[in-house]
Image 1 (spheres, rainbow, N blue to C red):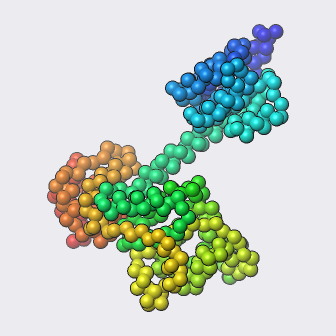
Image 2: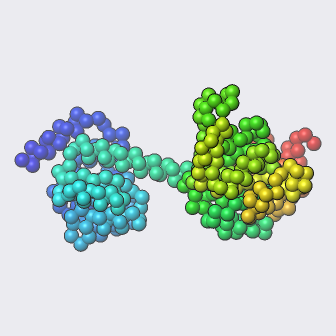
Length: 408
């Protein structure tokens, strides 16, 4: 009977399509050796790499020292049952766990899923269901891994580089303020890195899993800024051919970054003030009040108090936005950070070009410190890229004098 079952299994897999997940690693946890053997035969036929564990304790030791793509775990086992093993696995890894049991029922399945299992399959497993479940688990694991890598890449891209006293103070301020819902006004010249501060306030907050939406108030015409922020109803103006959600709605649960808010029209300022006071917005052309849960971070390169004196900016909005003020200094006030910034940009550019990072001589760094950085960090990044492209194997002080100021 056993040989006949094995032949049926092999026949089934001969006609099944070749797995696109071949060589993925699967850990089987089951105290019954015949079950482990049968599952191994099935999975190895599909080109999976299979490792066995006869109990939960042995499995946990394997997970500590090996990387698995999926775990198949029995529920009824001696020493430690499957649900306990599931909880321990989740403390060690994000690998998806599929629970398997011959004594299962709906309550058991629901409990397993509640505790974080990817899926639940009854014994004897339906072969098609088993393969589909493993395939879905691999898809999910791959997506989680790629998302983590992307977040790490984004975090690296938006890294605040520098060890000057001013930058260390900003980093400390971000760590203290980010976990709160306090509104923050970021000031500083163009190109100093105000957006980086805003992004890190979001990344280190409880809202990090939700949207970070940036609005450049200087780049949007005054007649469109209200539609951009609050949305509009169909037919509310000539080009409003359909309903549109605004950025306050889209950022609900997350962070809304209002960049260059000093350029916002007074009418839009009034609506932003109301939204901050009441946590509600009304779309252009609409009457319904829509609740929003948004943390607003604003930035400007202008002296807001001067703009208030000129009646270009509402004083009450300023006080709403400036619970915390973070000033980002210009590069000329943090010249000691130039070596770290140059190294960071050189590495970043090398990765994007698929080449080894080009070195800058000590004299080249000193020459860069002598320049007037009116465009701040943004300008420095462009100069570093230009020097890497136009210089030889190493960037020298002569290269800096020759290429750093092409219009001089």
